[in-house]
Length: 122
Image (tube, rainbow, N blue to C red; front, side):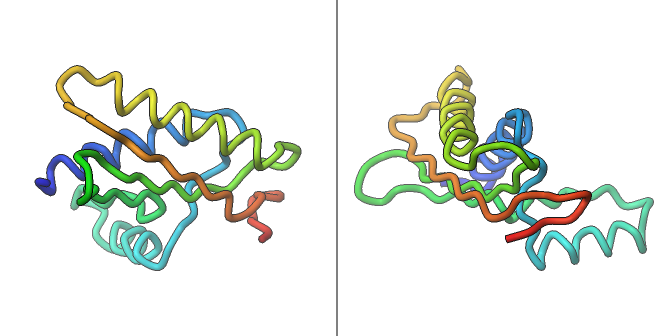
Protein backbone atom coordinates (compact mmCIF):
# COMPACT_ATOMS: atom_id res chain seq x y z
CA UNK A 1 0.00 0.00 0.00
CA UNK A 2 1.28 3.40 -0.83
CA UNK A 3 0.51 6.29 1.43
CA UNK A 4 -0.93 8.14 -1.58
CA UNK A 5 -3.50 5.37 -2.11
CA UNK A 6 -4.48 5.43 1.54
CA UNK A 7 -4.78 9.24 1.52
CA UNK A 8 -6.97 9.14 -1.60
CA UNK A 9 -9.25 6.53 -0.05
CA UNK A 10 -9.37 8.46 3.22
CA UNK A 11 -10.24 11.73 1.43
CA UNK A 12 -12.92 10.11 -0.73
CA UNK A 13 -14.46 8.29 2.23
CA UNK A 14 -14.57 11.49 4.30
CA UNK A 15 -16.24 13.43 1.48
CA UNK A 16 -18.78 10.65 0.93
CA UNK A 17 -19.64 10.46 4.64
CA UNK A 18 -20.06 14.22 4.94
CA UNK A 19 -22.36 14.25 1.89
CA UNK A 20 -24.86 11.94 3.58
CA UNK A 21 -27.90 13.75 5.01
CA UNK A 22 -27.91 13.54 8.78
CA UNK A 23 -24.13 13.64 9.20
CA UNK A 24 -23.17 16.82 11.05
CA UNK A 25 -19.41 16.25 11.07
CA UNK A 26 -16.67 13.71 11.37
CA UNK A 27 -15.60 13.00 14.93
CA UNK A 28 -12.75 15.39 15.70
CA UNK A 29 -9.70 13.97 17.41
CA UNK A 30 -6.74 15.60 19.09
CA UNK A 31 -4.85 15.45 15.78
CA UNK A 32 -7.69 17.29 14.04
CA UNK A 33 -7.75 19.98 16.71
CA UNK A 34 -3.99 20.44 16.54
CA UNK A 35 -4.13 20.74 12.76
CA UNK A 36 -6.86 23.38 13.04
CA UNK A 37 -4.84 25.30 15.62
CA UNK A 38 -1.77 25.20 13.39
CA UNK A 39 -3.79 26.46 10.43
CA UNK A 40 -5.04 29.36 12.54
CA UNK A 41 -1.48 30.31 13.51
CA UNK A 42 -0.09 29.95 9.98
CA UNK A 43 -2.99 30.74 7.65
CA UNK A 44 -0.72 31.11 4.61
CA UNK A 45 0.28 27.44 4.73
CA UNK A 46 -2.19 25.15 3.02
CA UNK A 47 -3.33 22.34 5.28
CA UNK A 48 -3.10 18.82 3.88
CA UNK A 49 -4.44 17.29 7.07
CA UNK A 50 -7.05 14.58 6.56
CA UNK A 51 -9.51 13.85 9.35
CA UNK A 52 -8.40 11.18 11.78
CA UNK A 53 -12.07 10.20 12.03
CA UNK A 54 -11.52 8.18 8.84
CA UNK A 55 -8.98 5.40 9.19
CA UNK A 56 -7.79 3.30 6.29
CA UNK A 57 -5.73 0.15 6.37
CA UNK A 58 -4.77 -2.49 3.85
CA UNK A 59 -6.15 -5.95 4.57
CA UNK A 60 -3.42 -8.54 5.01
CA UNK A 61 -5.28 -11.84 4.68
CA UNK A 62 -7.05 -10.92 1.43
CA UNK A 63 -6.50 -8.11 -1.06
CA UNK A 64 -8.58 -5.09 -0.16
CA UNK A 65 -9.11 -2.26 2.28
CA UNK A 66 -10.70 -1.66 5.67
CA UNK A 67 -12.18 1.81 6.18
CA UNK A 68 -13.45 3.06 9.54
CA UNK A 69 -15.58 6.22 9.65
CA UNK A 70 -16.50 7.96 12.92
CA UNK A 71 -19.22 10.58 12.58
CA UNK A 72 -21.56 12.84 14.52
CA UNK A 73 -25.21 13.28 13.57
CA UNK A 74 -27.64 16.16 13.34
CA UNK A 75 -30.47 15.94 15.90
CA UNK A 76 -33.53 13.99 14.86
CA UNK A 77 -31.72 11.36 12.79
CA UNK A 78 -31.65 7.69 13.77
CA UNK A 79 -28.07 6.53 14.25
CA UNK A 80 -28.65 3.09 12.72
CA UNK A 81 -30.29 4.46 9.57
CA UNK A 82 -27.62 7.09 8.97
CA UNK A 83 -24.78 4.64 9.70
CA UNK A 84 -26.16 2.20 7.13
CA UNK A 85 -26.50 4.93 4.51
CA UNK A 86 -22.99 6.24 5.22
CA UNK A 87 -21.56 2.73 4.92
CA UNK A 88 -23.26 2.19 1.57
CA UNK A 89 -22.32 5.65 0.24
CA UNK A 90 -18.66 5.21 1.22
CA UNK A 91 -18.53 1.70 -0.26
CA UNK A 92 -20.16 2.86 -3.51
CA UNK A 93 -17.87 5.89 -3.76
CA UNK A 94 -14.73 3.83 -3.26
CA UNK A 95 -15.68 1.01 -5.63
CA UNK A 96 -17.03 3.24 -8.41
CA UNK A 97 -13.72 5.00 -9.07
CA UNK A 98 -12.37 3.39 -12.28
CA UNK A 99 -8.76 4.35 -11.53
CA UNK A 100 -8.80 2.55 -8.18
CA UNK A 101 -8.63 -1.22 -8.22
CA UNK A 102 -10.52 -2.44 -5.18
CA UNK A 103 -10.86 -6.19 -4.76
CA UNK A 104 -12.58 -6.04 -1.41
CA UNK A 105 -13.61 -3.22 0.87
CA UNK A 106 -14.92 -3.38 4.42
CA UNK A 107 -16.56 -0.20 5.71
CA UNK A 108 -17.28 0.24 9.41
CA UNK A 109 -19.27 3.28 10.55
CA UNK A 110 -19.50 4.38 14.17
CA UNK A 111 -21.82 7.14 15.30
CA UNK A 112 -20.04 8.82 18.19
CA UNK A 113 -22.38 11.70 19.07
CA UNK A 114 -25.40 13.77 18.15
CA UNK A 115 -24.77 17.46 17.50
CA UNK A 116 -27.01 19.81 19.47
CA UNK A 117 -26.91 23.55 18.82
CA UNK A 118 -23.35 23.52 17.60
CA UNK A 119 -22.16 21.10 20.27
CA UNK A 120 -21.98 17.35 20.39
CA UNK A 121 -23.48 15.13 23.03
CA UNK A 122 -22.34 11.57 23.51
